[in-house]
Amino acid sequence: MDKIKRVSLFFRIIFQIIFVVLPISLVITWLYAPDDLALTSFIKLNAIPASYSGLHTYTTPGIHTYTNQGVLKKAILHTLSTNEKVLGCLVSAIPMAIEMCILYFLIKLFKLYESEEIFSLNHVRYISNIGYALLIDQLIEPFYQFIMGLILTMHNPPHHRYAAIVLGQTNIGILLTALLVILISWIMAEGCKLREEQQLTI
Amino acid sequence: MPIIVNLDVMLAKRKIRSKELAEAIGITEQNLSILKTGRAKAIRLSTLNAICNYLSCQPGDILEYKNTS
Image (cartoon, rainbow over all chains, first blue to last red; front, side, top):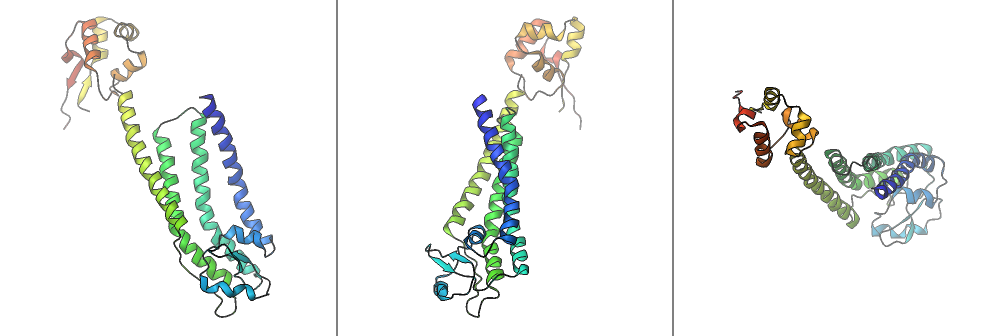
């Protein structure tokens, strides 16, 4: 039991640190970072169609991004204005809000483990919430990519703007994981009911 | 639930304390309290047997059905 408490405490602290650092880093990265790879790695623009593969020939300062093949390309062929950065930051805040919800539920979950509450309906509720949050996150991800692509390449030269709704293999993988988490939470809920019945059988 | 547990009535009639009964039938006072307050979802026949044996009564003296509809 002590081991569970120790490990739970360790993970809770890590999640709490990420919970605080994540939104701060989002704002700092968007508003203050120079147009370099730091921003690109943060906004997850990985869905550039192959037809845009010639974009690297431009020398205009802009943000680099990786194509699906993992090749470094330039996708944003202009310097981002403050308005674009603010808009990008706001749009990025949507998936981040969901990720923070997941972190919040994880913190609550590990707090329960710390208080030696191992198997209860509270756990089931948090695990189920994590599953639904993951599901929503993956469902909005293609639209997020679409809007982000639109915002960042809106002021590119003609024929170099892109907006695509792409459902990748990773999305489907996480989607299935989310469904599995929800299913497991249902099974756990039934288990909790059985346990409660067992406890109230005298 | 329309099943009412009259264990406290029987305990009063027999002038036996909860603690004594719990010890005699081998359950915790906490579980006996769950039974007395009607929060129990089920009662084992072995527990019922032990209670009836110790209180010298019938299951009907402890459990009562009242139609609430």
